[in-house]
Length: 302
Image 1 (cartoon, one colour):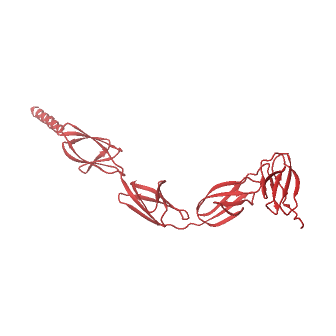
Image 2 (cartoon, rainbow, N blue to C red):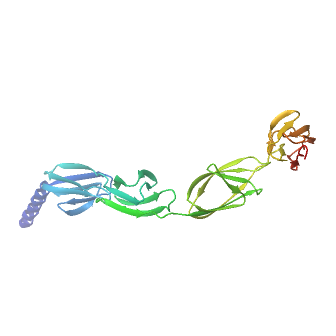
Image 3 (tube, one colour):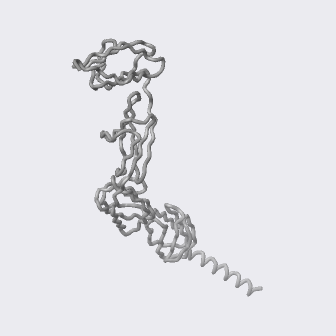
């Protein structure tokens, strides 16, 4: 019995001695769920509280996509050592070169400028890069940014498109970026991809202006034009004849006289030097416009 008591007391003293040779290490981090290493040995993830033998240690806190946090710590007997590890995001650089120069570079949707360009402080990991230049095929690719500078070089390929344009009604005049191209239905080949401003004009219909995005390959566009209500459309041979409505000058042929009064009768006079004047009366319909047949003027002495 006495022997057992001695062993029991010795065990208690030994246990207390072990306790007094330890301290507490409490570690938190931003972001959390980082791996924690003491002297190179993995001990858990943050937030972490661990009983550690007294002494000096090399503490490392690691997480993919972040710079490693490293610090020398001293664990003291019976004391708590608190560490807050703020990890910095790992970044790298990207160099983009193109032939020809002057292509716009987007990374994850953000415009960084024109090639050749070096983009710094990109987060480590996968990103989407888009290289775009008018008249050339767009390049879209995934890139893996690392701590070392990543360089990509691309040869741009000329992109040729074809566009088909139609309107209802057909026969509308097509003007693209200020240049008259023909009438609908219209097919245009060897067009560079890009954005264009297109205007349609047709007698008896409202002028229409649209923005179109032309992509590589075949592009088809169809537009519905809006008919003018209560308009009088006058054409003549020869053109350029002066038009008077109730003795008020309205312009020269071909002409659309808009916003006339429904069910009202108007006196129309058409005249041009060297030709006999043309006189008639027109009554506007309750709803709609009037397209007069081409007025063929008679030449004086002809």
